[in-house]
Image (cartoon, rainbow, N blue to C red; front, side, top):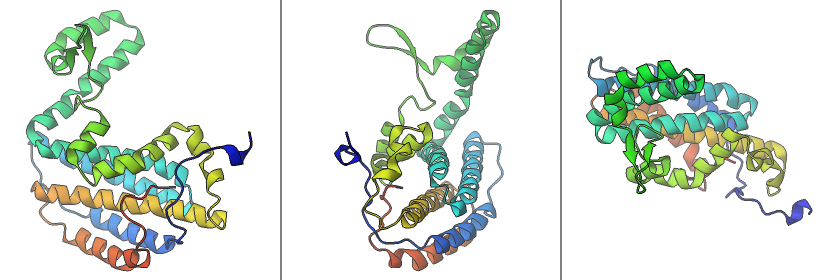
Length: 267
């Protein structure tokens, strides 16, 4: 079978060259504005989970900025998935902060239990289960056949279901973006061979730069959504600098490529 006979998905929607250098300049300005955003200090668990998740997301946003100037868009896609998932969880918890923040923290018991289980130390596992039975009960259930099962995450629903519950833009991004960045995360054939099937681009340099630019553009939107969520929850008292930086980015970049929308897939 030749390459011409191979069907591949993920063709770009546009051949317009994206202004990568300018996008990265705005990326850095937004990064600094995010880093200097004030957060309220509180012993409330929901505030703690939100602020800690925000900082985790900001660190991944910074990591992406180290990869993109070198056009390492494959690795950038992997870290983008990390940013997108922690942000999805942050917004999902934000729907009902108190109980969901509690579940978010409690699930660390299940994650630690798995590490003990893999160690093969049955005695330690028995003691751990006895001490944490109350916490574990929230994440255990019986299936239709009466078999004991354990939920795989703190939300007791999968990523697709959480994205659907949040609605757009999360739902749309899951449909168009999540599969692609997951392929890169797993080093799947579709990721390894993806560049070979981008023959529509006039040259490889434009393809690499556009792939990199699209990752930067989605990362910007996700982090700005995060800070806006914390403003709505009253966990961030002032996001003026972030809004100003994002508005400057939109004014400079979006009019130059009206065909590039929020839902386009990083190539």
